[in-house]
Image (cartoon, rainbow, N blue to C red; front, side):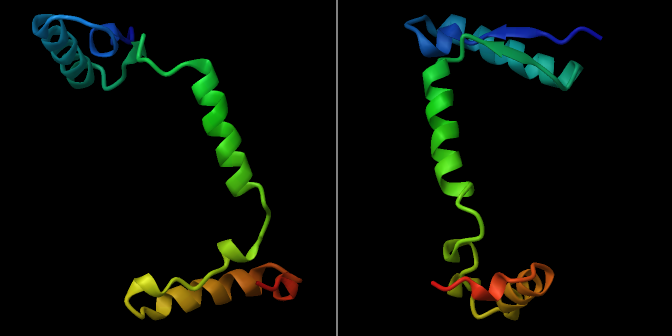
Amino acid sequence: MQIPIIDFAPWTEPSSPEERQKVAHDLVEACHKTGFVYIENYGITAPMVDEAFAWSKKFYWKGLTPHLLQNFPGLLGSPLAALGQILIQDSLPGLHTVSG
């Protein structure tokens, strides 16, 4: 099976409605026929990707800090929020020493 390559430039650069329609048609056709597609010229630069990974690392690589252990009241008072917190605390020794 050969995975189709779709050039997305008509959506990221000035182009005609017909060119954009062709890209949309080709994308739908590729998804229906193979289920996979390579997209090129999609407008996301390497520095943008690097910045996204840097922000992700800043947030997720903090370890088990209190912001990850919060009991979120947005779950409409569901006991599942507290259950999740208990399961995390029981499965990771020493976690009870984290304070927030």
